[in-house]
Amino acid sequence: MTRPASLSSTLGLARLLGLLIPAGAMATALVAQYGFDLAPCEMCWWQRYAHIAALVPALAAFAVRDPRAVRSLVLLAAACVAISGLIGGYHAGVEYHWWQGITTCSSIKLSGDPLDAILNAPVIRCDVPAWTLFGISMAGYNFLGSLTAALVIAVLAAKGGKAGK
Image: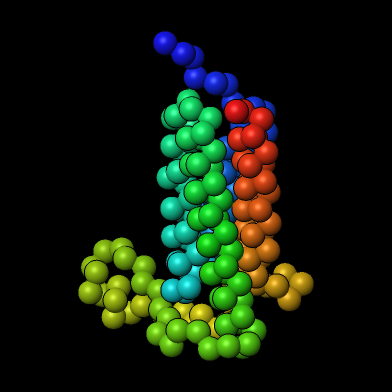
């Protein structure tokens, strides 16, 4: 019986970043929503879904021992992070009015009576940023940060996968 190969430190770092980046993005989004009352629009939710999806293979990468499987799972997590970044770029373009986004944006806070929540839900527009810093919205920062992070994770995973063979 052969022992599984050990992970290279580069692949281990890629695996760690593959988990911390989407977890940090989700934590930031939740603090913005619940700590600063910045309700997400529909396109904000799309970005969150991609980060949540990234957490699944990122967590799974910690459960497997085979470096090839770890590398594949980390690359899948990086792809999900990149997808969130691309959605963020599209959303930022909508906010800057470079192109038209979806036309039905709203956010529903489900607490208590669901019908009451639906009827009294505030309309959250996708084309108006809830917050900006230096003229860049949260969607814009997600675009910049997620694409950069996905690239770093993918490069580290690729290098670490070669060293682990």
